[in-house]
Image (cartoon, rainbow, N blue to C red; front, side, top):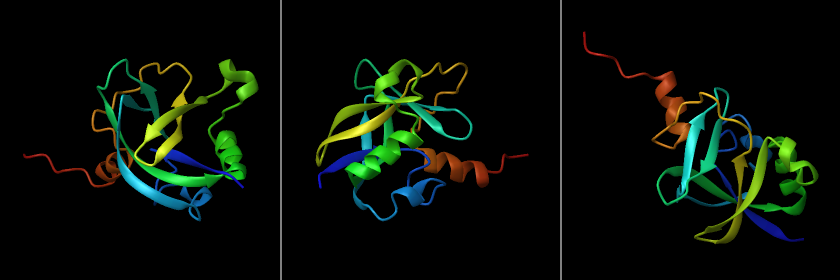
Length: 135
């Protein structure tokens, strides 16, 4: 059985709503990936590539099986035979651990705010524990 490296940056990250899907997979790293911008779609983040190395996102890298990659494709709304209708596309990337995959948002961002910090987990923590503003 072959395995794949997948970078996750949103609800699949440890402790978040969809992590259970990959909880039994081997997490091989945590770090930053440059060349992407993160936007807030409300229930989940969207990432889009930049034309240069500006922008960065916080990712966790996991090693997943062929079967689990197919489940991730379904969760991410990726259909290789209908790319224009896919919510995400799966893009090949280079990681510190070899070639891997990441899911790129494939729809219109509309007015989705840019998240300069590029870290969905940090954003959720800040939303649940906002810093008090001085009076």
